[in-house]
Image 1: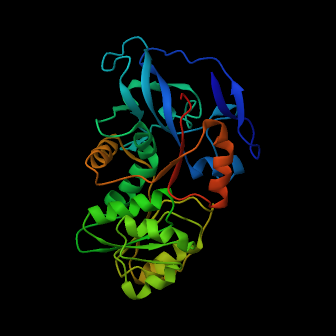
Image 2: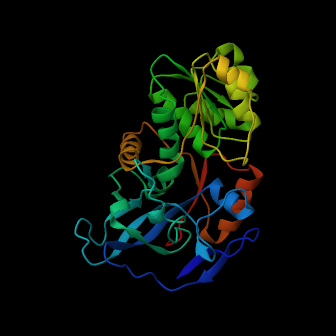
Length: 319
């Protein structure tokens, strides 16, 4: 089968022929019908974040498709089931089962997934939407609903209006909050307003007079986190999701004097993923996705690197 393989840091993914996967006991083979492209894969290629596995291996952690083979002992799924592979990070991180992280991922025509990570795709949800929802949607959902604790009547600011940020805006709106967006690129504002943002700004400092109850930083470039601590209200919450830089700095004076709650947010639970799929099925969340040919996957990652993507990119490896 064909797979885009990570071979070395600083080197583009390489399209290679690799053996078809065979499922061990408790695992299944999934024919990959959709895989989302994530900025974290760009960070991995560029060396901004460290990977637990050594190359060569296959990246791609936003995956959905059809079960095509069952390992011994798998009873809860059948060949032909439409499934997505959940990236389970709560209550405990299960990175060893995560596609593209602990095992070979979805930038390939097929993969093996542990049966415990699978979630059936509801009727009315496309395979592409189910794939990008495994990270782009549910990571934003967890950050805004669980970590930032968005509630009706609150003011929530979302920094970084890319694939995750737009879903963060929508999540805040569904929670009953008034949501403001921030991005250095004003071309993102129309999509943010379509998701429900009341207004958008190019600078976090512009939020100062709004005194948001919580700021969710999907950019994480250092200056955004620092500015979030400065503008959030007293006893407000700052949640960092983005991995735009390895280190950051902020005013400890503002952090302490305002009793700001500062925390990171990583991934989501399997139950939260099911909730997100239900929202998509109901039409309450509609991921913004652009499909590109599987052969253009490397070019797609370059577009992400350049900031030339609105929403999420996805490929269909098995199509």
